[in-house]
Length: 532
Image 1 (cartoon, rainbow, N blue to C red):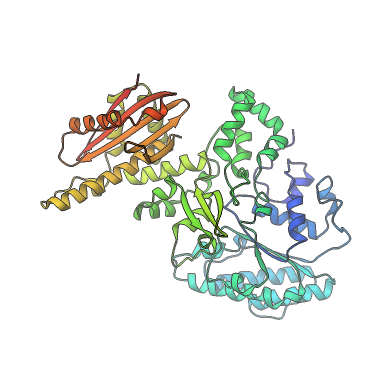
Image 2 (cartoon, helix red, strand yellow):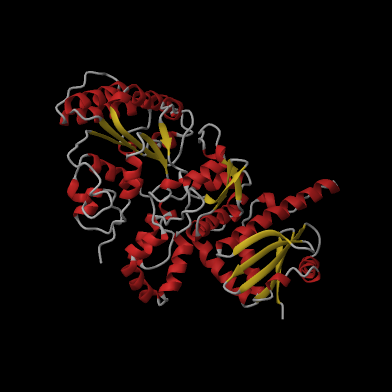
């Protein structure tokens, strides 16, 4: 078996040392023969840098690296193009002054390697000067490859120098338009499509391929690519985890597949897939590399947990740009990789997108972080507690489940405490608010366990609080909250409502468990029954 290219972002390193490579050169050939200035947004650690490295080796005509690949007999290897490759993660960008100094040094170093002397003082002028002089010296037009173009903006967001950093980038990227006659191809990648940076307005010919179905799989692995290229690893892992190949593939797909940018072509996250086959165990490999503390706190603060619990409908304007000064949660979650396109429909000639969490890895990890944020229960203990509580539901252990609910909710913030308002209307409003918050906590917890949750499912008899389905089991749940009503009364009401309205009937083809959970002030209790 070929070695897995874990952590390798250099195409030359990958091919020279015969690592496993998924051939993306058909997509690349289509791209470079039909476009001149291109932008691609993908989440972090999704193969963008490897794509940039591949383009660099292609335009420098390193022919031997492409032997056996789709593009090999289609490319003119006699042409060698000068390259300017910029990786903003390697350029100091804590302030405008740092960026100016670091980028100027970088460009002058590149010029020196080509025996070119730059006379300009400022980085943006050096950039334009280097492009023009490289073209004149080499004869062929210049290829500019910019990786993580938005890194300075994201890293300085909310800091005093943020506006100055964006102004620097505006001036810098404008030079691409000014030197258009000297450019062969420009490719830029990043996580976000950031507003107020002139690249998207100044470059009239820029082609954003982020949502273009022709390039939906240019990063990531399709199901066919996974099964063909990782076949030996799949068989080896199936033996290791004592599963059939088919069952293993189904579980891998559930955990790591699911990213789409056109609503049709689904791909695996490479940064999760490769470590999985190396370690042969399911884990949150991608999510663990960048815990989104800022995002979790924002979702909690603004009560936006349902954004990741239920499908989100958006039109194309949600993807047009990301404004650091006016954070919009849907573009932020989408571009960061926590939401993806689940479906795309044309409505009156305009696209409408349904967004959702891509897969089990992101869902479970995101729910754990959110649940910890809502309850203040330690994140490190959340997963183990959740698994124990699931076993208790399936074993009809109401006492054990209730005890663990009390443990998890022991440090719930003051906002969930019973209302002491003397005004009846205010007290009822507080009751409803508390019930909604407990409902969110419940949904987060159940979703974390891997259930497919249908919140407030409508039936011909009423609305179910939650239906949870997993491996031949359906749990029909009803939640009740009241500041003063006794716990036992609320539990009776919860179970009675499920039975009287026959909420369980659509699921009688499997094992059905009725789960009533009640909150009386800060007291919690549950009742677990089975339909027989």
